[in-house]
Image (cartoon, rainbow, N blue to C red; front, side, top):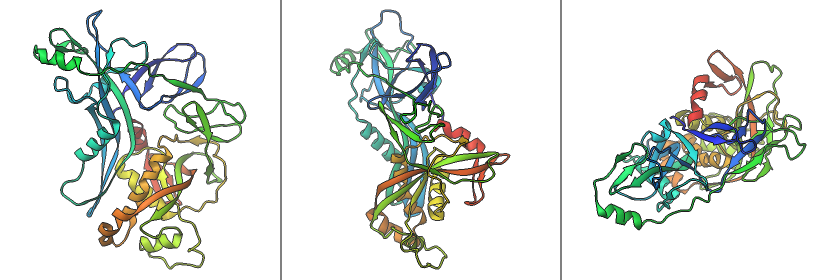
Amino acid sequence: MTAFVVEHQCPQCGAPAQLQEADRLIRCPFCRVGSYLSTPGSFRYILPDKAPEDTDLIWFPYWRLKGMLFNCTTDGIEKRFVDVSYQAIAFPDVPISLGLRSQTQKLRFALPDTGGTFLKPQISPEQSIKQAMTQFQSTAKELLHQQYIGETLSLIYAPFYYKKRLYDGLLNEPVAAADCDTEIRLDNLSSDPPDWRLEFTATICPACGWDLDGSGDSLILTCPNCQKVWQPEKTTIKQVRAAHQPVEQKNDIIYLPFWRINALVSGVALESYADLVRLANLPRTIQPGWDTKPFYFWSPAFKIRPQKFINVASGITLAQPEGPWKSIPPKGNLYPVNLPVTEAAQTMKLAVAFFLKPKQKLASLLPGIQTKPRSFVLVYLPFRKGPHELINDQLKLAFSKNMLAMAHNL
C-alpha cells in the first residue's frame, strides 16, 4: 500500500515540486500560489530511463489500479485491497506488470515535450478493471454482487529501446533474445502522440475571492471566509451542499466527512426509516411517523482499509444520525475528503447486503436490488481526539489514528 512520488514543476513560477500519487492541490512554497491539478481522462506518468544518450525510447503503457474490492457471496462480504498493474498492450517481450517499479522510482507526468515513441494502449481501462475483478473474484462461493470502490486508475509508461534486441530502458538490460519477429511486432504497434495536457485551476473561492483550504489529496475545498464548500471539476469549481453537527466542546475535536445520500431503491422497500427497521430486522417497535421519516445511505467520504470501510458505512446507515445540523461546514480541524460521492454511491448495494436479515433471503433478493442516488450532502461529524483513536461517543464509533495515517496510501 505504497503511493508513488511524482516530480513536477509549479505551473506559476516553475519551482520544483514533489507530489504524492493522490495529490491534486498544489501550493507552491516559493510563490505561494495554489492550483488544483486535473487532466482529461486518466493521469499519465513515465518511469525514469537510464538509456544511452540519443537513444530512441519506446514507451510501453501499463494500467495501474488501486482500490477496494468487495465480493458479496452467500456467506457474507469478502473485502480486499487491490494494487496491481497490467499491460495496456498484450506484448510477450515485455514484463506483464510493473512490479514494484512504480513505488521505488520517482515518476514524472507524460507531457507533449517528452521525447520518444508512446505506444497506444490496446486494452481499455474498463477491461483492466474487469481483469482485476475477475482475478480476485471468489471461486469457492456463489458470487451475488461484486463492487470495485475508490479506485485510482492511471497510465504508467515504462521505457524500452530496440538495438538488435529489445532492452529495458531503466535497467539497460535486454528483455528478449535477438529476434527479428520482435522488431516486426514493434513496427505493427500504433503510436499515441503525447499531446496530453495538465490543467490547473486557481483555488480561489468563486463566491468571495478568498483562498480555498484543503490538503494535497483533497477532492473538496472549503472557504474559511464565506464557509462555502467547493469541488473542482476540470477547469471549473462547483459548489457542494454541506452540513455539520455542532458541539459545545470544540477543543480536541476533528470533523470527519461523510456522504449522506438519498437514493431510489428498487427490488426491496427502502424509502423510510420504518422500511429499514423491517429490512434489517432491527429489534425496535415501529413508531408513528417512521413511515414518513426519510431513509439515507451513509458512507465515509475518506479512504480507509476495506474491512473498516464497509463496517462503518453500514453501521452509520443503520444508526441514521439525526443531527441537529447546521447547513455550513464547521470551523476547525477538518479531515480531508478523498473519496468522491460517485464512489460512495457504489457502497449502497453493499450496505443492503450487509444489514439485510434474515441472510437466507440474500441470494434471492440481492441480484434484483438496484440503487440510484437522487441527492447528497457532505456531512461533517465531530470526533474527539483520544490518545490513540478518534471517537464519536454518540455513534459509538472510533477510528485508529494509525489506520487513518496509513489510509493516505490507499
